[in-house]
Image: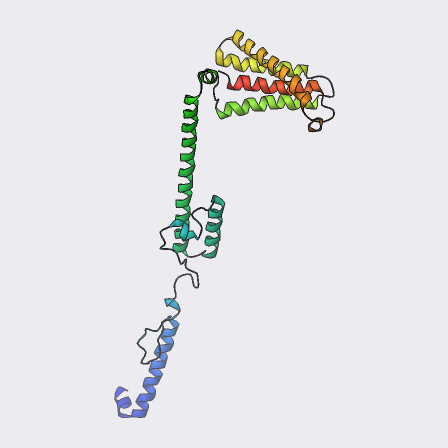
Length: 256
């Protein structure tokens, strides 16, 4: 067969053309591409040469070192602006892994810097407050020696208790005076003070003293306040008891 094709030029040409066309069809089915023969030295491309992800945009500032410039914000930007820039860029360049990693890295760097700055500010405030206390007069230092700052959990529990007593007094003001609520608040204050001082006598003196001072202050200052600040049904006795609750709360929470 090959000798016949070589001896007959027209037959060999037709045979070669059919052979080449059949091979091209087979290669096309396999996903291979061939470019047309030309003088252009560029390597022909096909669908398999396109980058992964199709037409996904690439973040143009991937290699920018400054995190502020990378996110496109001012060095004086607030945390809300930093969050906004991060969310906007992640939405714009979603799907491109390197772009997302670059945006997240800049955001985390700025977030850590902001956290460290707040931490240093708190430390500076504590040191300044301590310095002010050390520079204060002796009488002020003696006064502070009777005061302590309780844990936040203790503060919230006692604030909630006296707040509920105050709300209870307001809700039941139409039925009568707040004598029962005042007695409960006094007992609660004495109980908390006894836990601190381990002395019932001292706790009782401090509790009754706080109640007396609070009631006197309420009786003096409440009438001086504008009447439009209070509900018309609130009596002077009720408002004075609210002031007394405040003094009892401060005494049992902050006194040593």
